[in-house]
Image 1: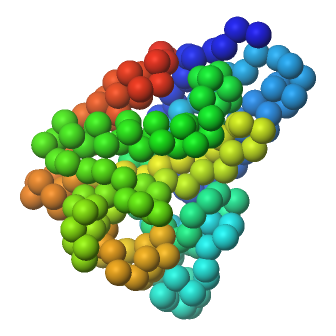
Image 2 (image 1 turned 90 degrees about the vertical axis):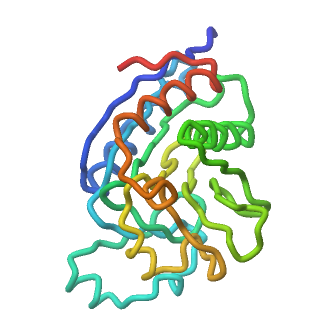
Length: 229
């Protein structure tokens, strides 16, 4: 069957986490069903921002959430345990979240290569702003000062679920994120590493649409794909 390397981009804007998760599941199940029947499959990339929310991966430790259920309720912040990889993270306004619902076989790469390539897309996007970022051994995501012990700070988190080489969940890039909310967790389970954003590193607010356009361009290059939308 001919591989489909077109990607349908859907920008959901500011959307409640549960709503975006439900939409992802619908697309994921539809893609999985088509693949199991031997039919051609589509690829979707969802862009969005979320109101304040904490999410914990399936193998994460609840103790990495450092505030009580009462505190969450009083501050109107939901918490979800979900079926992605990784530990706990925060999503909120000013953070660009990307959910690829892909048939990875369309791109003729392994699951490991798929995750690696997404990290590469983010690294190359950040480079446009004059910042050097890289991977950190035994820690998924994208980091600033990854080689400087005690100074490592994560600028983008990755956590995916991939079943039968169909993906969901994805990445979260801190653009203009209020980093104070990370103080309520051990981000991704780490107690000795920090978090940062483009805004913090550059000392000025960054245009979200510019980040999206750069990400789209780098994605098309790395994945040899065409984004529609």
